[in-house]
Length: 462
Image 1 (cartoon, helix red, strand yellow):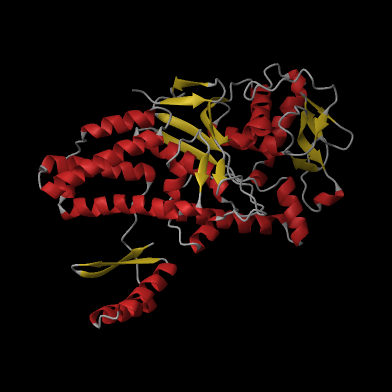
Image 2 (tube, rainbow, N blue to C red):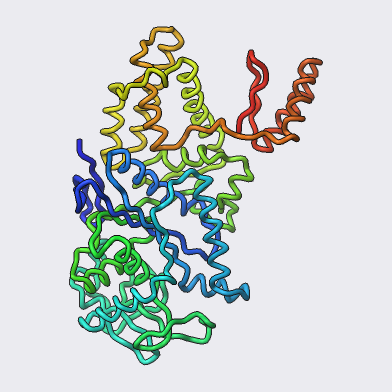
């Protein structure tokens, strides 16, 4: 079957047909770099990583653009509160974000445009909107988009603008989902902005959040491109406003397919610092989570369903990740990689159909795990052919290229850890089981798992 996506704009699944055969222009809303990204943010980023990996596997050349919002209400307010420059603040959190992306094994985007580098493009878009009568100026130098001038406003989120009063407008970047209002394209400079401001034909100021993405996406992918992603919380007002200002400025359709991921629930409820369930990636690393374990929790549920991330699920996700990693080692021990000739087992076709059905990860994972169980049974019984081993190796490599669950065995052990292992080994030789167990627990807290095998101790990352 051809790949199908649930297009938020049409509220239905449809076959995906790229604008240019074999190529996909993909824009994803990146972080607003005023603070560390948290696990809720990464639910969306991980879905987008999965999407790109699958499209690439199908043979598409994906041009992935993820923006960095480095100027908006939040970044200016935070920089002012800390008494540092906007650049110093946003550089700090951008660097942390990139470290988190790499640790989570997420494929890098082709480009990461920053809003502050796209100001000239934003000014040109606003000039077009003013010339065409879709926007108007205010005395303070601000420019607003007139949502009544765009009959299709509200199509994405089914917002009805009839109740909007003439002259209702909002300058904040984020506002109530049930309050459609004229929104700021450009905000006239005020004292609280400090030294953050750019000159424009209508006066000094800074862009509104929504015009930033329209400028950066069109600059990188053109006025009309294939797929735009984000979380459901971005649908209104952000994506609704993007559609309005982009289509009015360019006369082009803007985006063919809109994909939105649902909220992530944490430990039974909405993530909140006051509830103590607010997790940054660095927090989870300190708690001993592996990147593969986090990937499993974020990808096991369908992207359009709310999913629960829980510390209590850590053991379960680690166990599943270990099963897949052990399966790879078992295939290697049976020389499966030497029998690989590019053939796939029947289970791969079912797996592919599941993924092509709007990235149905729960069913795709079930298909793979059932296949893995079947192959393990054949290995136990020593009733498996070289062709089956080769096909299993091919399927496993495809599976991991999509999900990234297999843990790497390529790591260095520090002298301190080596000494602890030697000490534990001596304790075992002396049958001092209490000391042996104590050292094992100590190593686990430091991020290592020690297993006792017929060939002696084996250590791997937790």
